[in-house]
Image 1 (cartoon, rainbow, N blue to C red):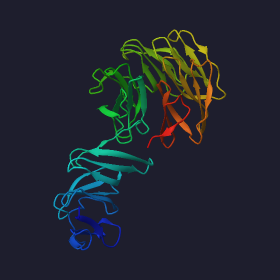
Image 2 (tube, rainbow, N blue to C red):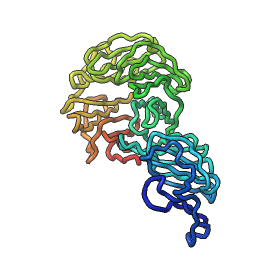
Image 3 (cartoon, rainbow, N blue to C red):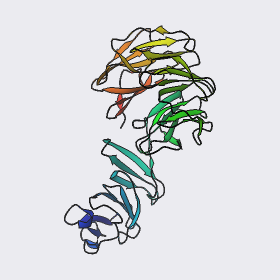
Image 4 (cartoon, rainbow, N blue to C red):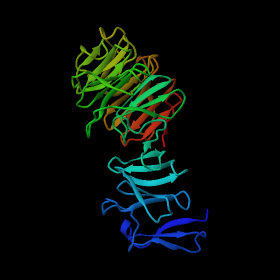
Length: 379
């Protein structure tokens, strides 16, 4: 394509740029708009905003992005511009493949992360694109080897994401209602693809029976769960924050009873089998919490852990800023230290069959598919 459009002129502010165009591969240029008579690309843009990227699909269709999340489009080669919308984040780069379908990278400086988003309507609306692992989800649960569910993303704290089968792509299947500004998802659990529970900070326990499309409150109490496992449609276990109690429900979350006090996390894989941390050490139950047996102790305080139904487990132990990863194949009877190199883990999640996810504190995501021997960063 010989038609090119570029921004030329002095200064870095939007109001200081001239818009030039060439139709002969750059041999000559003509002014489309000048600073003295700029196109309508300002809108309500704050004066502190700067252009960050421009993309033209052809000689007519183009888009502009700026540091305040403003998006503008032209369909007449830059003579006139329409403000599409304002996002919350700086726009780093854009690329369109048709007048409707395009991709864009947004950067959230205060979280030091970038998010890839996609539009199918020319830029009027955008949805995050997820790969192997959503960036720092509020909670994530592996329902089975073929189904994983996550809640909360950088761009949408109420998003419910699902990953099924061998497809590495996550898709958003619903949104939690009633999330106030600044609110987060405390915990989420699904017993199967249709039945799930979610707890919002400062809100009631919610339930879905249609795969996260709709939600209803099943318990008005504002619990402070840090983990929650529903093993079927009526039985679930949850642990309270700050060394609170391990609770159990037998009626789908309508009521809870105390199973054990002063725990810091729990993981149940069936009605009877589960693990919890008490006084920094792991214990296991095979009778629904009626009795507990200490597993082989780790050399430091257990901060986070995850188990699968076959007894495979991972645990992070040590000081908060220097955690080590350990793996067990037998429910905690034996443990092996996992060398992570320079990775400083903060969260883990088992997938089964020797696969797992891991996040550091930045947060960067990593995954392993060879029994936790090697870890690859998710780009």
